[in-house]
Length: 157
Image 1 (cartoon, helix red, strand yellow):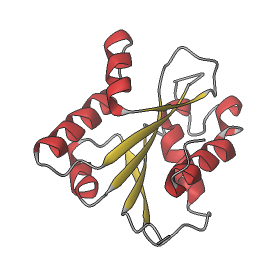
Image 2: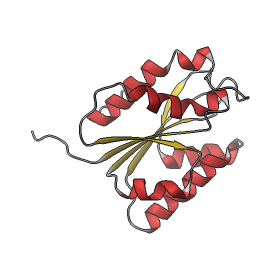
Image 3: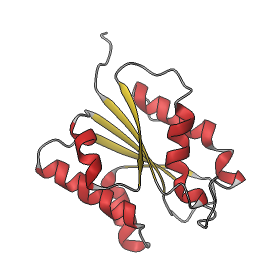
Image 4: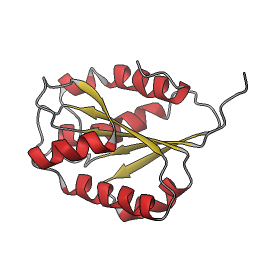
């Protein structure tokens, strides 16, 4: 069995000035200290939208980490496809970066450069001014990293 050489982009999104809203950014920063295969790129997507298209175009697989209000307990972690998240966004209030990100993914699909995409969503507890996530989410960062590493390896644990 050969080694998988897909170009994998792990993108943390969110506003890291708003406590749990920035969990994706905090996870990607923590992953800087984790040894990763050469075919994996980490990017802090922040609240950018269309500016991320050039990075998305280069990827075969895209793993997005973001705060997602799925109605769960704070710190709960979910795995979604973009279509599943779109349904949730219709039911719940979306943040501006999520709308911009989905518009960017739609554009990537239109331009025929849409990578296989999954979203690791983390239920926020508090979205208010602050540079660090709440303890409920900070304690989940190692588990989120494990899930992302599983996705990189092709496991859906």
